Length: 201
Image (cartoon, rainbow, N blue to C red; front, side, top):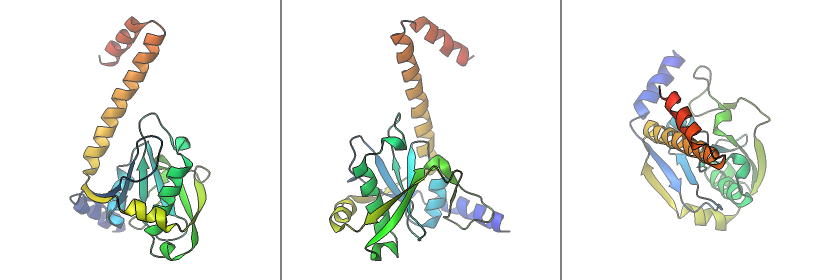
């Protein structure tokens, strides 16, 4: 069946564990930009994304799925205009049709808004949980930006589940630290310790 076939493909391609990363994305804070090698890696990235990921794709055309991972504590609302522009230029350049156009539209949305049904959806394709929770941006070809970004391209090992698990652990530690700072600010560290003790019993 289509469901079993796609499920087996996911298991098989899980052993590849490679993505492209780009270190020349402009941003006022550290970000990680990454892209799957093909549609099968796209499936894994859809499956193992995290809450701080923002997904970019050329609207209505076939293209790479490109993600920017934000630091803990940031949301897609914090994306600088220069970061969005770089991401749009990158995803446009990695579209067979889009790269030939003088201009195209790019859609971007938080990873959590991506909707993937194993039944009835082709490999590497997605929908949206909330169509209003996405943005469209016109992207005019800019060879200088593309050249700068592509120079920083690297193929790196990316163990999907391990990478996600580490992010989840980091998020848990970050949230604990933020909560502790709040209690310290309120002058009630003992209450924080009591809450933590109860949470782990």
